Image (tube, rainbow over all chains, first blue to last red; front, side, top):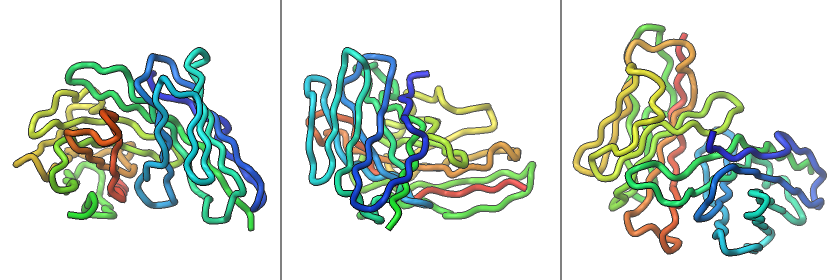
Length: 114
Length: 118
C-alpha cells in the first residue's frame, strides 16, 4: 500500500498537554500534508511540508519530516478540548502522469480532556 | 460555491438497490476526487477526475461502482446493487488546476455522504 500509517491509532491527553502523532510512509514524496477531521465532517487541510524541508510551524502546530526514515510527526502544543478530532497524514507522491498522487493514512484519533 | 457540497448527507437504502451520490466542487476547481471512509478507518481512494475525464479509476472496488463528471463541475458516484459492505462515508474533494501551495495537491473536502445499506 502507498498509504501512510499513523501512530498511535488513538491518543488521549489532558488539556494543556502536548500531543504528538507520527506518520510513516513507503515511497518518495513531493510533500507530506496533515489534515484534521472533526466527527461527522470532511477533512480540513492543516499544514504542508515539502520534501526538502525538515520542520515547519503554523500557530500551535509543528511538523517535522525525515525523508531518510520516511517519517513525519505532528506536534500540537498546549492542546485544547477543541483539538479533539482525527488527524491524517497524506503523502503527495512524486508526479505520475494521469495518476492519483495523494494517499491518506489511517489516522490518529486525538481526545483532549478538559 | 464557497465550498464542496455533497448530497445527500445521509442515505439509507436496502441491499440490492442502486444509489447516486452527488458532489458539487468549488467553482473553478478542475480536479475532483472521491474517497470512501469506513467506520473508524482511513480514506480509501476511489477515483480522480481532471476536468471530465477520469485518468485514474484504480480505486473503484468493483464494477458496481461508477462515476461521471459533466461540464467540468458536478460529479455523481453511482453504486449499483448495493451490498452491506458498501456502507461508509463517501467523501468528495476538489482542487484547482493551478495547484495552490506552488504545485502541491491540497484538497478541499465536502462533509461527506453517509451511506447505510440494510
